[in-house]
Structure formats: C-alpha cells, structure tokens
Length: 101
Image 1: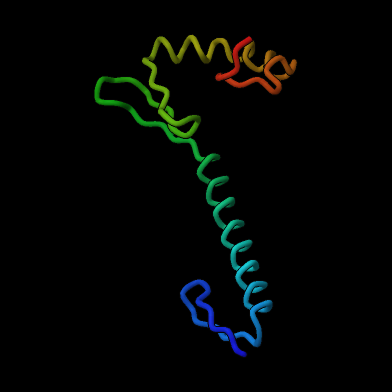
Image 2: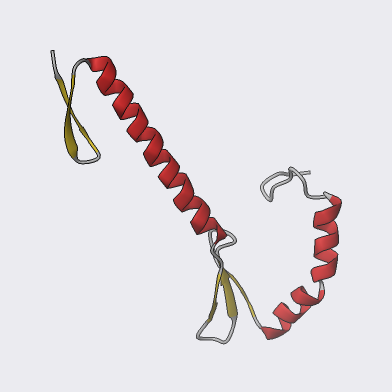
C-alpha cells in the first residue's frame, strides 16, 4: 500500500510507511541543521549603533543590547588586557551569570 506524505511542501509517494518515516526523519535532520546554522550565524553577528542620546549600543552579545557612553566604552576598552587575562586563566569556565556562588 502506497503512503503519500508532504515533505517540505512537496507531496511524495512511498511504497510503505517505514520508507515514509525514514524520509521524514531525513528531512527533519536537514531542517535542524539549517536551523542550527542560522542560529550560529545570528550569534556570531555583532553590530554597533549610535543611539539618539549619543550612546554606542553593542548588539549580538546577549538578549538585549549593551549601551554605554564614550567615557564608559573608554574604561571598558582600557580594561581589555585584564579581561583577556581573566578569560585566558579560565576563571570563568563553566560559570554563568545566573549561577550563584
């Protein structure tokens, strides 16, 4: 008995249900890979925008943008070597903001 299934907007006919299931699983894996690639691309993209009030907003590092003014950005950038040292020392490995000490 033939099984008709719509996969990615296209009707396909299969000889049995097992072949239809395998085709749907393959399509599902392809879609999951595409979704993961899109998420990875989105995560990697960082953008900057000058706000109406004169702050510089950094987008793409979290759910909300990080907006700082000139003096604040200067202080953060001046501390870049210290920040890199902490990251390279592994002091933050496995820790997240939501974790309490």
